[in-house]
Figure 1: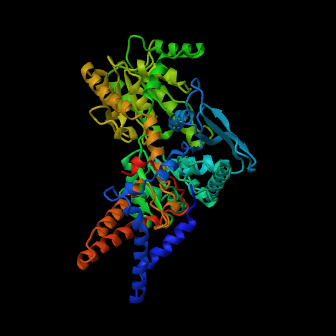
Figure 2: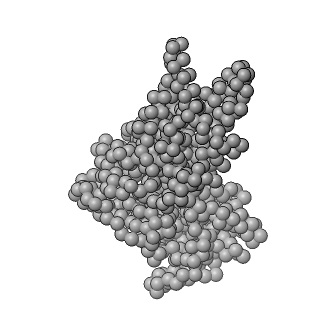
Figure 3: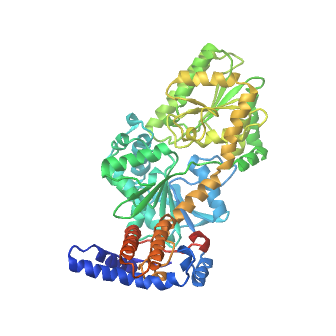
Length: 606
């Protein structure tokens, strides 16, 4: 790998000579261009008949390829996984990334959930599987504004299109920026890693802050939440500054096409930037936008079903299931968060019981989330009051319609509860993906599966269509009630058909596929040929996305060399093709400053 400042300056200088306005400049420009072609010709001419791209795949190139080390990945997020199968997961992000780190050898940096004095210290590394976890004590002075304030009282409701839940404060925004700066300085200790993968809304500006520190490795960002329409983003303080900072990432990943399109619409509305083939070009360079829908590990979930529970948790699960012996029950598993629509779900259940008394019970598992935030405390009170009203109206001495557990369960325990439930109810008002929907499906008995009732505003609804899940508008309790009723009475054959189709999708794109796809795409941000291999361009071509541009240039050059020198008209036309293809290639190369250069395997040049 080499830095390309000098090479880029050389290429920019040479290329700029092709655009002079005067006749004298034009003569000089053509001479410079011809000289570049002359330098190019020996390498291409030595392998007549070979494809243009293979013409430069020398033994020396192959040697460099074989010496490339395995990709070294840095994962950065606010929340870390517990890295303990007997402890409950704390959200979709933790559930998604834990296996990635343990199996890939990555370093995962995140909050220790303790606060410090903000002093910059060496990055602590603790082994976990083949990877490492680094727990940072974030600055105490800024933590309230960073976490409870801007992240969760401003960004979180905005991203979920709930403006009435938003609160704004410039002080919170300043704390948010300073905390991102603290994390960037901590990560500087591992700046020699190959690529950086940043996660979620707590860290929107981190890529820009890493760049400011001189970390020029490819940097990607993945958003686990939804991305709202431009009008909602406009309600966020300093939204233009924040959005501009996201363009410092080389790759932006979203859960759904809807999220990606909303992000692109903001860029178009506020910056006049167009997205072409998933690429946004700015003065910094290129930012690629792509959908990466998170999956789960269905094999691991099957292992959870077979795993032994601790005696205490076995008793906890058995005691719950005894409540539903001989009857049907639905299950909802959510953090106690106002975006999850639990209150609307309870009301839908209430409406169902009025028309079909005693038809089904609901097990609602809802561990507390952000319990120190006033809005969450109030939401907890509202949900519990609604549950109490339903139980008072429809319950008897021997039967309670809703069993509510404000508690966490391990994945192994949840797998057993999912398996026993006749209906899985996943009805968030908005959600990035919602892995609980996929976990419910994965836990089912293939011969007698349950039915998934799913919010059309969850990311999972882009994966599961109306012929698979029962899709509902979570804002309308009557739709939830009707879907649960339909699920209760659905024939076995239809249940199996719906389940099989969803399970096929889950098995075909797992959490490991998601991670591999993202990292592979991010790795394309590394330039694929060292600058010193191609003096004729000064910097070579960039990444796999640009390979066709180089091939176009090489093909045009080869064709030009085959033209009879005596045919002036044909030679001039061929020269024009070469020049235009070179200009197209060089224009994209102008955006590779501060990128690292690595070499592809020869086969990838075919």
